Length: 299
Ligand code: PSU
Ligand code: MN
Image (cartoon, rainbow, N blue to C red; front, top):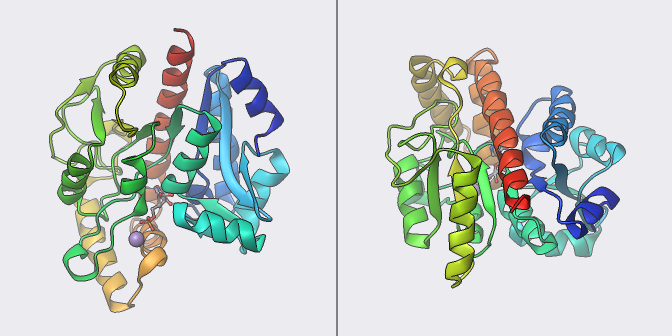
């Protein structure tokens, strides 16, 4: 279901930016999460684009939420976490849930939205050899034509393995004004990227070339680093990350619970500093996604 605003914008070919809701419902503490959700939508609007936050409410998939719906996603503890594969059972059961990158990208692309902003993508987890935990985000992006602006993948993951998987899956990666893949809380993960875009127009040129080439649909990842002045202190990051991973192992957290658990652990163990870096990254991504959507609509 498209909101009135989103439907009008798409039919007038105005710029629209999709936003995911899992970061709101399960990635940020209440009640700050609602303020952030509202702020992110406002950032899109002030850049001249229309925000389309995606979620499932009472068994209906929504692309674009009104203020009450956004509040429900942020405040209702019954809101589940929905990946792409969870959409059908959630719709059938009349359930409500926040959408991850995989579910958001799927619903947004289906609605005709070309640009999507998030914090960090899911990816290959560090214990992959033991449990094969790899986010459904990667495979869904391998067959969905959408441009995703993110700050890389969360450092709780195995970053080089995730980059390798993206290559295998044929998902394009552009560093935004950087030759390195960002490290989510950190400006750089230390791993190089093959291609760099220097402006929103550069990104749009790649989107155009990709469309002109045709072939199987796949996503384009625009990897936008958090500014160095707003990144988490790298030494603090490395120390608390090791502790959080150990806590996850010790408490036997698995499956969908792993990502929210680790994000929460990092927040507590950095006294909230990881949260500030996370928010700075997301804000930057939302601003850049809006500029890309505006540049794409202008052509
Ligand atoms: N980035 C964040 N916070 C989050 C997520 C990403 O800063 O909460 C969410 C995204 O919705 C992403 C999901 O799609 O985590 C990945 O979860 P999993 O590893 O279970 O696939
Ligand atoms: Mn997982």
